[in-house]
Amino acid sequence: MNAQVMEKLKQIEQSQNVKILHAIESGSRAWGFASQDSDFDVRFIYIRSLKQYLLLEKTTDVLEYPIDALWDIHGWDLQKALRLLHGSNATLVEWLYSPIVYQSCAEMEELRTLANKTFQPRAGVYHYLHIATKHGKKYLHSEKIKAKQYFYVLRPVLSCLWILDYKTPPPVSFFDLIQSHLPSCLHPIAEALVEQKKFSSEKDTISPIAELNDFLLNQFEIIGQCVHSLPPKTKIDWKPFDDIFQKLLYDYAIL
Image (tube, rainbow, N blue to C red):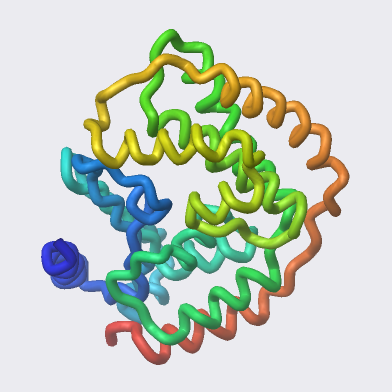
């Protein structure tokens, strides 16, 4: 399948006249609980031609492709990516730390270092808490729920707890989050859900799990209270972001 991903990335580069700097897998495959019929959530950062960055007319900074049963492909322009990273965008940080990397460049290590140095814990908690509560309202009160829907609530809740404790970006791996911040009495439930998701269809449902629901709903309240104890967003210097942008333009932009 990697060969098919690489072929799609090559086609994007050729058709859009861009250079892909970093391409990874996001979603359940990166998190560690993909089903047999999970799609491929390919995310990438690309750089355009130098001439396009010098145009006054606004140019699109996102490349999106139709989603089907197998593919979900989405990319951000380097300039957009760096602006989001400057704002401590948690989604972009996850792209930088995905364990499944299809292609990349050496400078991504500099971006990871920059992401850690400029990480804003309060913004990170708000990001993951928003995801958790949005999905929690939608799924936790249903008569039936899919295993993956539990993960859409549980993973961001555990990410919030990680940030509250360590003030660093949370790990991408769901298993690392389980080991660090899920009560041990709930480990068997989470592990059983992972196994069920891996070996069943994405459409299969289960009955709600009371213990897990109670934990999640309780954490919504606790996290909502604790987030205010985190330091407010600080002013971040643009210079290191400008420096790496200019370096990548010099090294990789199509002339």
